Amino acid sequence: MRIGKKIFYPEEFKGNYIREHPRYEDDLKTLIEKSGFKDKFCGLYKQRLKFLDEYSGLITKKRDWFERLKHVDEELYVIKFKAQKNIRVLFAFVEYQQVQYAVLLYPFEEKESKKKGKKKTSYDAAIPIALERLKEVRGND
Image (cartoon, rainbow, N blue to C red; front, side, top):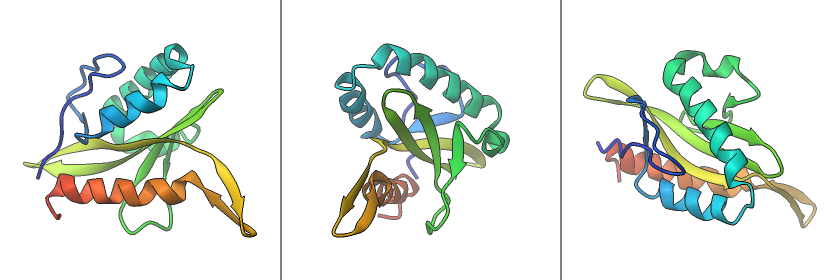
């Protein structure tokens, strides 16, 4: 089991409960640096991480910020950021040495596209990445 490291980008977050997958920070950096809304994102990000850190069991009560994904084999959750870019962060709760952690797995921009008459979302691409990273964190790879 590898729960990952603490959060340092876009600024250090001092909570003890939230960790990130080793590749998460680079993905977030790439996504945010080219988005043009880094400053606004930083405030929203810190706000949601603080809520997650303090109220982990109650996050789904704050539906405009958090959601449990349905129709996924594992329990995956999403943090939502609605602004000029719809950034999403997939995460899961993982127990390590009898302590539960929230592990941030994969950030992405939510978009929809219509291909060959089917509506596809960026979730379709993001969920398999997050599930693979969850397996790595749990050591099931």
